[in-house]
Length: 74
Image 1 (cartoon, one colour):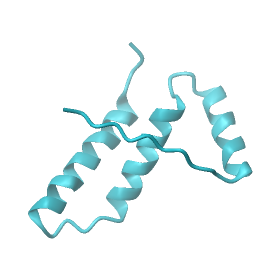
Image 2 (tube, one colour):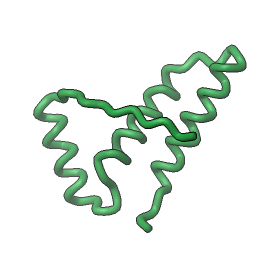
Image 3 (cartoon, rainbow, N blue to C red):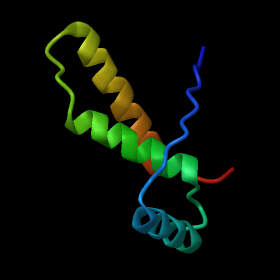
Image 4 (cartoon, rainbow, N blue to C red):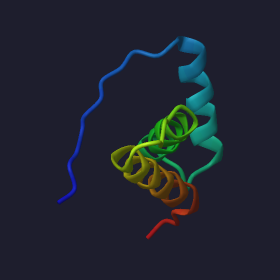
């Protein structure tokens, strides 16, 4: 089963403008895909995969990151 977490976050205006420009020039990307890639990369870079559970989480984040990078429109 796939759980969904809804995130409502305020971001700095400069970051919002950058995201908007990026999405305007990259039509195959959408806001959800960008956030999934960014969040999974953050978790990968800041994880501690010394336990079995953390290692599974690391692999799951890596899978989400790679899927978001190489996702193609249907």
